Image (tube, rainbow, N blue to C red; front, side, top):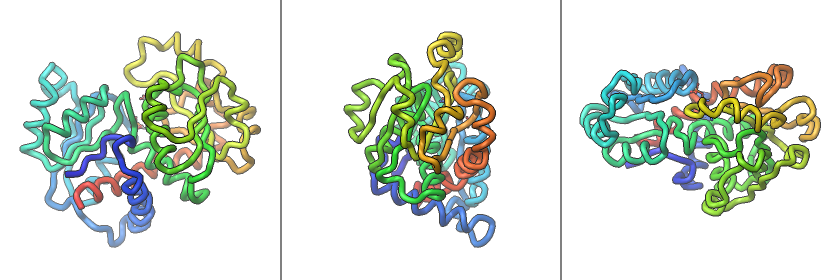
Length: 298
Ligand code: CP
Ligand code: NVA
C-alpha cells in the first residue's frame, strides 16, 4: 500500500514520476481526464486551518471520480481526545483513502499505519510534502530541470516547508540555501539525515546572491501563535524585498507557499510583482495532488 507522508520517505524515483505525471494531469484537466477514484470516498481530517490544501484536495478528489467527507478535527471525537489510532481504524473501515492535516509528523504516520488505507500528509509541523511537489513542478514548468539550480529560502528556516525543501534538495540534486537567524535554522541532526547540498547562514546577501529561486513562508506557522511577538522580533529583516531580489539572478523566481503576510516575510511590492508565479504555485497544488492521488491508487 502506498502513502504520501513526507519528502523524506519518498524515493527519488517516485518523486520524479510524480513530477512527470503532474503536467500530463494538468493538461488533461476537464477533457479526457481519467477517473481512478471512481467509486471511492476519501476522508479529509483537518486539525488546522486551510484554504489551498482543502479546496485543491476536495476539487481534485471529485475530478478524479471520488467523493469527499470533510472532517474538521474539532467536530469529530479526535478533537475531544479519541486516540488517532482508533480514529484511523474506524475511518479505515469506512473510506478508501485519507488526507490528514495535523501537528506531529508521527501522528500522520500512526494514522497511516492503523487505517490501512492510502494516506496523504496535508501538512504537519514536520513536513508539507504536497506543497514542495507543487512548488518544484512550478519551477520546472517555468525554468526547466531544478537539478543544479540554487534555491534560497529566507525566513523561518526551521519550519515544515523548509524541512520538505531540505529532503527535496538531496533527492533532486539542487543547492538549498537557508537564510535565518541561528535559532531558526534547521537542526544539524536533520541536515545529517537528509544529506544533499544545504547551506545555512545568517547572511541574507550571501544566500540570495545568484539564486534561481527566492522562497519564503510565514514567520509564525500554525500552532506557534503563542511565540508570535518573539518570532516577529527575531525574524525581522529576514524578508524578500527589492534588495534581495536584486541579488538573485535576473530571471529568478520569487515564490511563496501562502498565506502571505505583507511587511513580514515579504513586502507588498515584491509580492504583487511576483503574484503570477505565486498564484501559479497555488493552482499547481491541484494538479500535483491529483498526480499524488492517482499514484496512490495505481
Ligand atoms: N499553502 C497551504 O498549504 O495553504 P493552506 O494552509 O491554505 O492550505
Ligand atoms: N509553515 C506554514 C505553512 C502554511 C501553509 C504553517 O505551518 O503554518
